[in-house]
Amino acid sequence: MFRLIYEFIESFRIAFAQIRANKMRSVLTALGVIIGIVAVTLMGTAINGIDRGFENSLAMLGDDVLYVQKWPWRNVEDWWNYRNRPNIRPEHADALNRVIEQTANSELEVAVPVVGTGTNVRAGPQQISGVFTFGTTYAYARLMSADFKNGRLFNESESAGGRQVAVLGYDVAEALFPGREALDQTIVIKGQPFTVIGVLAKQGSFLGLFSFDSQIIMPLNAYRKYFGVDSRRSNAQLRVKVKDKARMAEAVDELTGSMRRVRGQLPGERDNFSINQQQAFRDQLDPIKKGIAMAGLFITGLSLFVGAIGIMNITFVSVKERTKEIGTRKALGARRRTILLQFLIEAVSICLIGGLVGLSLTFGLALLIKSAMPSLPVVFSFGLVNISMIVAVVTGIISGFAPAWGASRLDPVVALRYE
Image 1 (cartoon, rainbow, N blue to C red):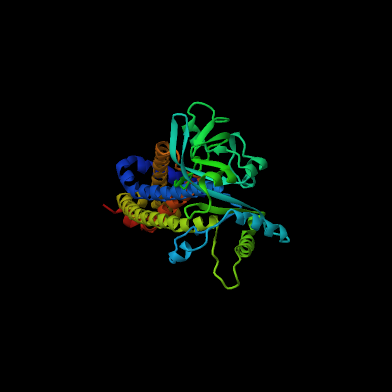
Image 2 (cartoon, rainbow, N blue to C red):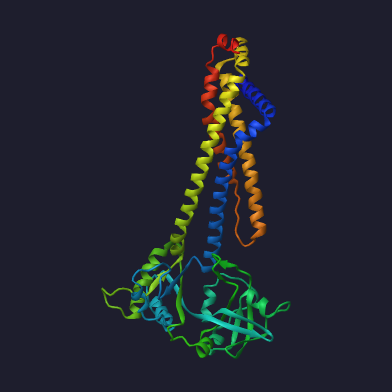
């Protein structure tokens, strides 16, 4: 046992002495491994970043909320079928809540209507356009995942009375009231004054497509007075909170049956509504992740293959250069195992150095990307470090085994006569 440990230590010492003696050759030999490790770690960093950003975005939607809408969250082929569906109406929420109350052991908790559109908002000299403004009821508080920076959501009496009060997203408040608090200030929407009773904390954007910080929430009855909810341009939906997200499939089935009752659909009729959930986005994201993984694995495999051939070639050259040394060591009693370990560890050491250089380059690139685009989630995990080191070691073993085996099998007499 002690002899084996000594052989390992001695093999590492000889390997690093050879690497130091042939620095440029070692660097060029490790180049393929460096490129391969950079490729695999960048691929892993990109996938981890996509997953992190995606999960953060989905958390804003609510992982226990179902969305009843006219259109599904996916591409459709029979476009006219969806186009001709009757609109979702806010009144459907009241009917759906009655059905939920009458259902024993219902998987659903509450249905909340949401109707929204883009509009212009003004506060004194400051004006912004295209702000997503939506009306809902006080029950929306049971769905909210966002925190408040200041203030609160409207209460039941303000909701029922259609009071002209509003809750602003973080970016809206900053744009309309730069350098001062927005709470209790007045904004103008559709020529009507609204009092700011709340400001949401910063949330970010959904997959970079929609900002949750650029929105305004008002009571549904106030929205109805100035925007209306019956036109085809109105973006109406029902958001339904599920009691137990672990039983999401059962909740979807119950909600489908309940909505068919609310819409008065007969057995055999096709659903004239869509129930959307986070899984629809996950299904669309999976092909993107698989594409990145396939491209990264192809580049990684190609780079490591080229690198392994280079390492094998250089190890063969090293064996040839040191044939007399091998003969001398074997004549003095060195075992085949010792010679095998010496050249195998030399190949693995080159790969490990290449792996460490590759990881350093990837880490630097990740920091550069993060500083250039702070909103982009960049996740460099320790799991990637472990995978990279394992890949480097395996590459070294595979590429160095044949030359090392050949060196260990040399006849000492022939080796000593080698010129």
